[in-house]
Amino acid sequence: MPSPPEDALCGFELTADFERFAQRNDIYRRSFWDPTIRNARTERFYRTYREPLANWRKADGFAQRDYALRNAAWHVSDLFTEARRDQDRREGFSDPYTQQLPPAAERLRFESPEAAAREIRRVAMAFGAGDVGFTARDERWMYTAKMSDMSGIERPVDIPDTLTHVIVVVMPMDRALLSTVPSALSGTATGLGYSHDAMTLLSVTQYLRNLGYDAIASANDSALAVPLAIQAGLGEYGRLGLLIHPRFGPRLRLGKIFTDLPLAHDAPRAFGVRQFCDICRACVEGCPVKAVPDGPPGPPPPGPSYIKGVIKWTVDAERCFGYWAQMNSDCAICVRVCPYNRDYDRWHARLWRRLAATRLRRVALWLDRWLGHGARLTPARWWQAWR
Image (cartoon, rainbow, N blue to C red):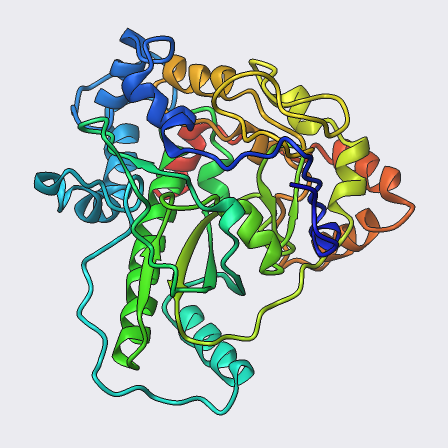
């Protein structure tokens, strides 16, 4: 399946051997069924989210209060994820959310798809979204099947074909918390991102249903989020394998809403990330297990956890997740050290971003390193700041 011309605007390059992805092959699903991934370390890693032991590692940032805060941040997300366990569903991860009221009998008509998009963006931002984009459903990024974490059963993705528009929601994560990575404390930013994302997705979805339209909220389930976000004009793909957003860099979570409300779609936008990543190696050098590729974009490595037929930077999923299990918490060192992970409310950060998008990008990279950007904040200092 060769790439259509519009893929060039997104930076996509698909080859003739492209194959859609099955959810059972993502590294997290594999950790439940694949004996090459599931081991004692993996089991211990997941237990840290359930068992309130005093110490899982003897290091700053891995004490009881660090895990307590991290797991509390996940609590709202977990409530929705675990609510349908008796139906073999883990919503937001293996399955889309279903805790919604039915659509209203009468539909509110918008004067145009553009007017509808303006209103939904306004509503999503009011409900806490950091940014919102709109794109068409693209079957290439839909999973061929979903897989239950609990039973291991594969089932069809339950998003009707009639929902042809996708609302992509950006949820920023706390920069100070992420600066403490590697630590269990830094995982608080991830948990908060998922919990806030769940609330925003469910609220916007119910608003659409209250207007008489069908809509289904989706987090990590059903489809690959990054290519949809790029198509929705929310940023570019970075060397570290994540979306780079103009305001939040890679410091974000993504959610999706599939709907039949006609919406004007956003155009992909580039702001120099690809050219900057070509010369930057911050994430490569920062990754302790060398999971981030050092060379140019290319075909995926062999292995089930990589989508076939897409030319891109591909992070080594086995090494990355293996480090998570070793550390007893999720890792985001690549996010912490990424030069785009800045506070863009500050004028000098916005100036840096403009410089990075020009032919003076090497100067921007030099400045980033000279200023010591991406240095770790010790968890002890994070806690002390609140005393």
